[in-house]
Length: 465
Image (cartoon, rainbow, N blue to C red; front, side, top):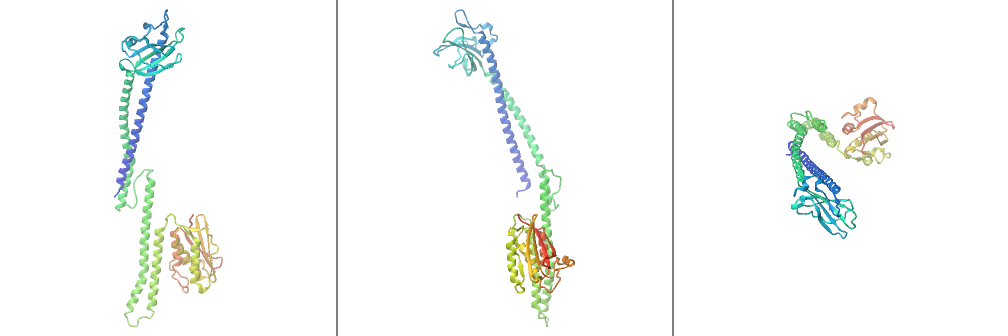
């Protein structure tokens, strides 16, 4: 069986897994972004430092008396220019008008016997290009080149190049990335522990709910009891409402069963006595009639309690809808046949065709059938059935032109089994059945004076949209 404990564990696992996955993704993206940002910053500073070196060389570049370019090494402040393969290099190339390049016209001592390989590209005078390439001994370098014009030399351009190895800068980036990775790993571990604690604390009310459910299941409590957070309390209230509703249904079922047993006790006792009398000499000749009456009484009580049980089971089910007009017209046709010998006119012509009852059709037939049948029994000539709807309530009226009932007797008529006149056939259960069924649907029954002079019965029920 899938218990709340398993559901809680599964929910805890899903929440923790989702939190850790989101956390890992966030830390990974943050690490990549920070590492890339730091690398970009380092390379930008590296390029800025090379630009300063290039500017210094540009200011030192000039022509000698013979028209040849010269750069005085003594004017360069950085000692790495004079150390072979120091990692910082400069070089001056000559570019003729036809595009031919004469590499290494001048170069730093740090280049020793090598030159910086650089493909020809078109440079505007004074413009700077940035390249990545290979320097002496195959080391990775960042190169900046600038086109410089010297004196009056038509068709000749000079290309001044500064290069520096990027190994130390990239090692600094790698060290930062390593420290950043360790830091993010520690931070991720701490956040994972915090997420685990948060999930455990956040789901702890469900363990209390599980304990309360066990108390209800084992019969030690009728409702969920305990202290729960405000986020969980609506669930507790709704569940307690369901438990109260179930308790109400069980109590009603017990009451109905008791009422049915009590109602059938008397007819069965009479039948038992009548059966015993058949064995005695001179038994009453009307035994068959007595048995039929008692069986009919028992059948009416069974029908009564079955109707209650059906309505109690269907009460508050969503989506129930019964059109009023077809039910009324069908009952009118039946009652005209039942009371055909009395020539009672039943008028239901004023019924709107759009009205609907929010309940089962059989229950509406039960209620209206009793009201119309009762009106036909007491009417002299006419019975009128009308209906209206207002504010979500359906009002049905059944009126007759009979003798009516005075105000003092109306309350007694609604009681089960009450009959004011024994000359009219019936069991006295009709209006009581209507009253009980209406109340089960949240409605009521009122007895009034009809406009025809007899009794008017107003039946209020929930209307369907």
